[in-house]
Length: 141
Image 1 (cartoon, helix red, strand yellow):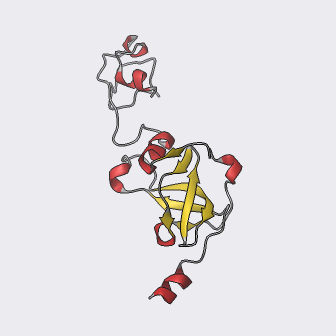
Image 2 (image 1 turned 90 degrees about the vertical axis):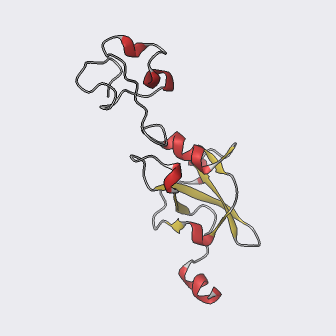
């Protein structure tokens, strides 16, 4: 079994691009299924440290928990290596819709979406079709 696993999952080298699957509970319906990262290093137990755009992921990953990318899209210099963040926070920071689920404000439109009373405006997001579909809004996509 170990021999077959080593053949199927070849060793990843530092600076290789990888895709890490995002667990279903950590991503929203509009988020991608994977997050792209770069391998920083590998220890003697074949555990890998992976960096994504917003920081280094907490914990170490075994080779069967991620897939290698055939092309080099990013390098270590493209990633933020100064902070460690959990996978859930990394997904939320890269999300177009704010992470798990969709945020909706239920404002009455017009000029009401320019203040912190609006949930979307307060979170730094644009109002979407679920907020107030037919009303005009300054904060709309």
